[in-house]
Image (cartoon, rainbow over all chains, first blue to last red; front, side, top):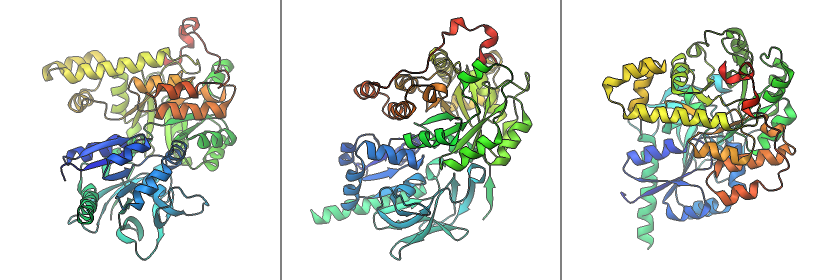
Length: 200
Length: 293
């Protein structure tokens, strides 16, 4: 696990914040600015930022196909906020979708504008104590297919979920000093590495 | 589950989500859509861009709320708007309208020449300009959740933004290396709140995001500011006063993301058409310099 390399898509947004948390766990955090760097990493984080901006840069710099390939190999991907929007198969009230990898329908800016951004304590499946979640112009999962596991809800809206090797959160664990949510992702990467060992 | 609105984390975090991005000045819905399509992370809704404010003279105030609303309805990215320095009511009006960020801006004519807004009292986050660490720390002390260099707005001349970015970063480095017993005197010299300076010393960096602003006119200018340590870039007159705004907007966004890929910036800078016409700072009389506000 000490050799685990986790990449953070470094096109725009809160990239350093994720790298700092990865480093705090004693792992290697790599800022991904070129598609070929995806080869070096065991797990990928799509950070918070502006989903429209990140999506345009993903397309312009040829990231879409390599990220889909990364996912096809069941390598874990974690999307926070904008990352959740990017991973969704469907966007509410919009014909667009971005990477379309996860069987969820996501509503953008679902809680309102910036003045409605908030912090709240959340119960998260897999974490013993509540998690201080920071929601910034956050999306939520409006609907999810049956095989998507709901990890947390806020006012009955899904704000964290997992589907096989894909993890999403509406909120920003990287803006807190609490690494427990990231550790859930690290656990997924460990499981992937172990399954690869069995295959090989 | 208790819901906390407008906390420091939520306000500063909003600016953290803008990092590595470009925020563009727009004066109508059509420009806002061009900005969004080019990959801007936010737009600043204005009645006039700074170079036109400069040309028009007179008192520059908060934009007509109709323009701000039109822009808010046109795009899904965050919308910022400017309030005059110290103008409590303009700021409250923009907050009530649901603007995502307020720029307490020297581009507009100040409403108060002595006091800035107490920004911690608002739910909406604020960005403020700074030329040095003293100014930066005072604005943070008042509750600014984001900073930007002042530069010299509406000139298309990067020289002042460079000066301000270098100055703030050099002063942060100096404070970081200082002994604890030197810090109070430094606070006095800089005119900076001691507690904020102490936080900066401990963290080795500013506690909020710091963007470049005030003179960015080309993709290379944007990349230069990133190279100097800016977290992102505001482009005021640079995009919509250029010959081909769409191309310019696209090129500036990409140059900001890949600021140290010089081959790419060279390619992006080809056949862009002419940039906005600039102004040499030396030709500006002291009273025409917005940064002194």
